[in-house]
Amino acid sequence: MTMRIATIAELPAVMTLTSAAYQPYTDLFGYPPIPVTENYEPRIERGEVCYGRLMVPWRGSRSSSAMPTT
Image (cartoon, rainbow, N blue to C red; front, side, top):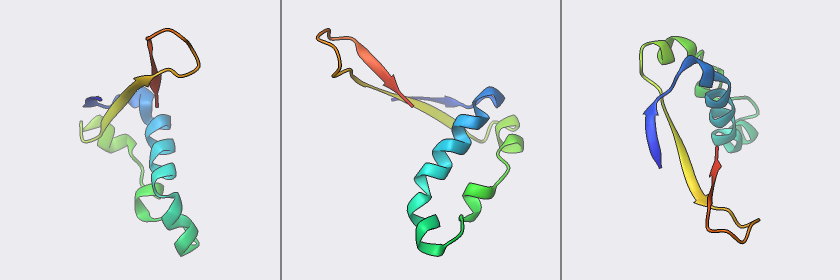
């Protein structure tokens, strides 16, 4: 996995990932936890948010190339 500081262009991805990660708690509580509703834009601008991509083998092809997952 490659980790780096997130850019403002990745804000939608950060929000999507955060929402997905906390979905079990949203279901349990009946409302989203604070990290889901937080405004990450200021944190990204301050360099406080990391973003990573995991490279896994692509199983839909016979080649040995890797397909990124986000």
